[in-house]
Image (cartoon, rainbow, N blue to C red):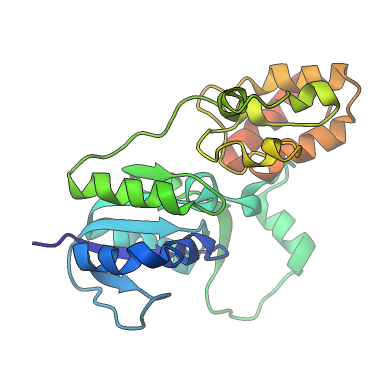
Length: 261
């Protein structure tokens, strides 16, 4: 029998779902191999009553409705795959660095709202903050080839693991000159590989959109960049954009310990 799958989006740009549709030549074969029960971006027809073999979910949990949907998806899915930066790390919406509570930061932007809204806002967090995530496919957005590879492995009952080496390894394979030696802020040493070092290959410093590696030595890189004369605020902003909630908290504590913030 065909595996039953669902493809869902929470708070995000929907770029990961769009790149699945951009599979083009492979898309019909994909739809033939899987029995797609829900994929709103592709079709309004959806069956949410069945148990899914695999659920692909993009976007962060940023509202009460997001959380409600995620819990329902997790309950009916054998395997849940977080796709894209927002689902895995929380996205740019989770890049807070200040100590004050989230509601205070929210009200600084939107003011105090007493009116009833469609859904209550929550502090943006990755899927793993609320449910078990069985596999993750990084990217901002995800790339076509890794998605097809992941889908193929799941068909055979294999839950893949992502590479545990940084973008720097891909730069070395491409014989790129290190941008840190050319006066560029580059997060390659701290960022998950898999993108093929696209930005450094075009002389643009890595901004970390594939998320931090598991054992990132962010303290060493911050000190290296400061020693090279980079502005601390510029360094922290670069680190926080795609670092997600976990790195943001680590950085805040590190800076406090160093007496820098």
